[in-house]
Image 1 (cartoon, rainbow, N blue to C red):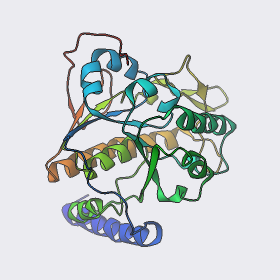
Image 2: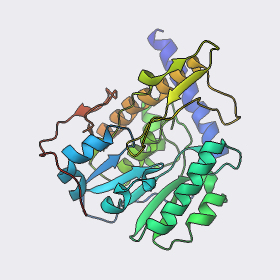
Image 3: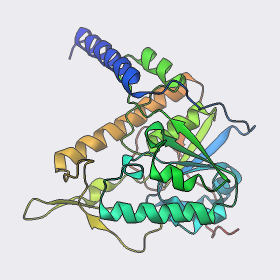
Image 4: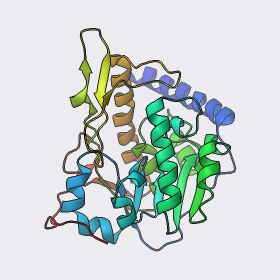
Length: 295
């Protein structure tokens, strides 16, 4: 693709992004700069490698403000680390129609958030979840403050995208919860963001059986065993292998978009995960002596 074709493509993507924002985004955005002096934050993804990261980088994790994601509240570490921020992104959290496995997990998450969270915590969730059963149930805990964000995907000209990012009307395609997590941390005003547990190694666990059924191990640091199952689209259809790799493409590409955006606002994103396939961010090696994190 030559430069003119690339420019025209980006202009079209920007125009299409404006259309999506008009149709999908809420203009009463609640994302405001953080009210704490700290400039650093860590984001805990739920990859299986987080178990080692918690041991090897325990001091760094405990001394900083923390984001956690998805089903982190089901782990024992949730109550010992007491994260200040919690982020959900998957539509399955607020859609009524979902798989039986996810519905069971969601019910367990609601119970955990209600019964375990005895400290003040901000929970970020997309605007689509405002009237959801999940929101209605979890807001009963007065320690949890809901903050709604726009998850409208924005692409195209970098200058236009960055402007829309800064005013919280859209973000890079949120194909993985880590993308809105990093994005929101940047827009809250954190200048140094360090990731842990961001293995992103799903491709190692993809299998295609003799009947062409594609399955993936859904393994997290808190799981007692690997859970192999198909991936499902919102419509209930199973993903084919090209769907999975397309989803991975947008996720990994999104990290480079976030890196460029972070640089434009004077922030940096570091990857402290011992194992990680994310190649967009500078890697760091912990100097901590391995130890168990305690209260």
